[in-house]
Amino acid sequence: MQIRKIQRIQIVMPLLIRLNLKYLFTILLAALFLSLQGQSLASVDDITNKIFNQDFEGVPAEIDLLRKTSPQQAKYVKVDYLWWKMITDNTKAAEASFLSELDSVVIEKVRTGETEYDRLLYFTYQIRYDNLRKKSFSKYLNLIKLHLFLEKMNPEEVKNSDPFVVSLFNLMIEMDLFMKYKFLSNNGIQPEINRSKCQTSLTLIENLHEPCNKTFGICKTYLLGKIYLDIENDYTKANLKFVELSGMFPGNLIFKKSVDYCKAHLSAE
Image 1 (spheres, rainbow, N blue to C red):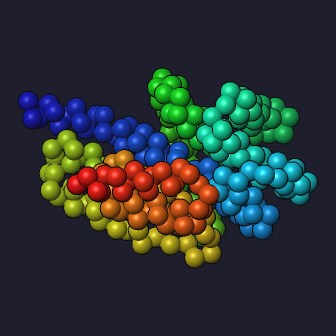
Image 2: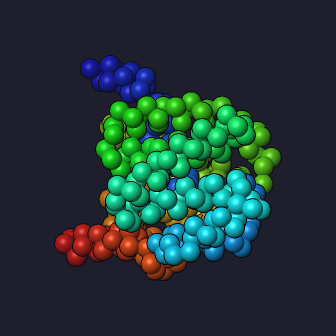
Image 3: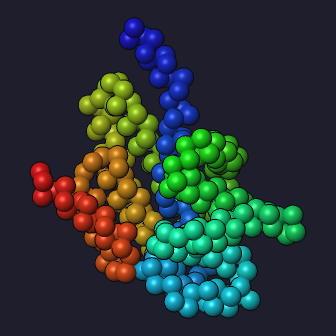
């Protein structure tokens, strides 16, 4: 029986690891697109700071202005703006606006040609939306599509990219290892050894830095916060991450609610 269990795990583990990894990255990929374009524009920073602070006044006009000089980035910023607007307002009108803009990202390929970032953008927000609305079949179908799309990425080409992309690639490698060891531990395969390896991977992720790009640090902090909260059930460490995010974006009620959620669990212990 033990041999059969191990055989079943060996069959399903690679796909589950990858799907879990890709799902975790859908919580933060959207915030990376601006940096992946290799540009650092003060106007983009200003807009994204407003969005993360859930301060939407004047943002549409600023996006229209950005479109005159950086149409690709304006497209990404607008999708992110409409996503945050939807989860903040929670109205049918806000949801319809978001879905319409997301569809346009893919439809535009007929006229302008589709970039890899366009496709990543679409999958990222579609999976987040499916998860938000509990559309399980659509979510896992898009996770598989995203997995197959990312499988085409060439690691050697990534290593020759700018420092931000290299840092992100190293983050993904450690995340891959973390998910593998977590899966093995949860299924009773050398649980003590694999739990220790999980902690080693998390420590390495904590120590990853990209000094020239603050977006990497923000995304890493959010990723670790979600890992500690949703996977590790470590409310002390999760609280530290969301307190840090709330400090950077004091207007973000979602980060604040995450802090309150962690503190409620800590006080009940």
